[in-house]
Image (tube, rainbow, N blue to C red; front, side, top):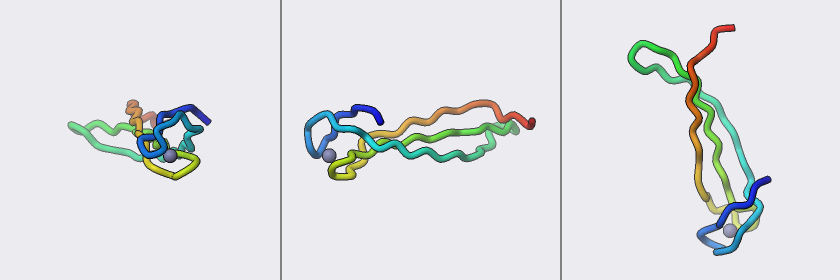
Length: 59
Ligand SMILES: [Zn+2]
C-alpha cells in the first residue's frame, strides 16, 4: 500500500497497486517492462502508472 493523491476524492488515499510484466522489442533488443498502476482504494479511480524497463535476461 502506498499513499497517493486521488484526483477524484482529492485526498491522500491508500492506493491499490497492480503489477504486470511484458516483453518489448526495441532495435533488435528484448526488454522486460514492469508496469505498476495505482488505483484509489476508495473509489477505484486510476491515479498513475509507472513503467520500469530493464534489459531482458535469459537466465
Ligand atoms: Zn478516490
